[in-house]
Length: 454
Ligand SMILES: [Zn+2]
Image (cartoon, rainbow, N blue to C red; front, side, top):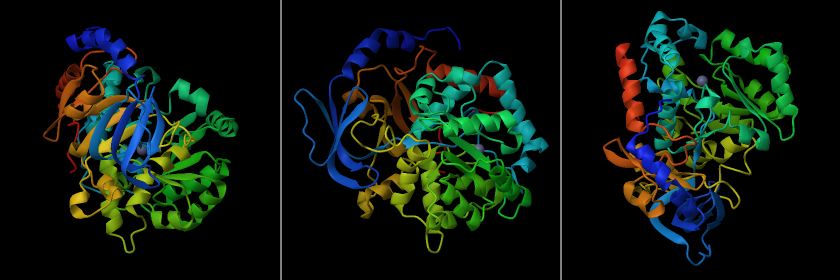
């Protein structure tokens, strides 16, 4: 990263100790709680030192606590188990055709020209950490507090939680291995994955399998190869699985293997998505995730929206809005063994939460509906580890006196704080400028932070 310290970064250095001190004062936020197992109207969540102390309808607020009233929906921060962060600097990729499987489009000249070559040129220019920073901010504007799929551990600056390469998390909660191509897994990769899955605490393996059309034989064959290598084990979650059969889902449920569903990217690239109705009948634990923004959603709020529209088009719809919210929170946490740390509003959990405008109220719909129909302008706050990282200026000011930058997201001003970053860096405006210039030199444009629900 650059060494230039902007005025904002200098201010961060000066004010950071005050912000850290502020975390030790208990903070009570009121609103409609989505735990996510249940809805608690007029609830309160009490936070101190980065942890949830209490959450419910009858929470005693200690003397001296900061109290912030909202009429929003307070839910666990969204957990994204399937992304490819550095690619999210690119605008939407519209190949105008459907493919058989992932190997088809990855060898197309148009993909190399528009995506792959510029991506690796940015990396060879030393901009990989700027790319990841941009992608993490994008994820946060979509209500995400945890992500996977960064390319470089050195770029983990402590903004969102990077579950797959956070060394501290790894030692506490088991290693999380994120693997894109099962066919290129060497014997030693397989041995390493099995060792992680057998370790205590148990590790996790998130792996792309059967990504393609439901009728694509080579996509389908990936599952039997994977099973043949002894990898159908608890702690494994299969990503995509468009070509999986009901029998495959039954084998996964029996083996304690989870499933990560990315409907938008599937439908845009292959014209169809996984047989999630069969996965549900088989009782496979499922999470929802956006894949990447070029063919998936900008982030998890967008993917929740997409999944809920898709769900409504099915007869009968396999999911309730509550199911979908759990797939983006508590189910996702459970798939990587973090159910005691993140993913629900439970005392002792990290204070990773979001506040969303309760748009359902006006339509006589519940808080699950508000969460599955929210767009980025409805995000009032994103808190990560007790730090108000992003949100509406008015709400942010009530919680923290950390310096912030202002972002224009879908016509609304939002504030973002970089106080949690381990090293003070350039301003976000400079990150955007640097990436924008580099992309322009290749004839490409920096993607907007948000497509605003489109
Ligand atoms: Zn992927």
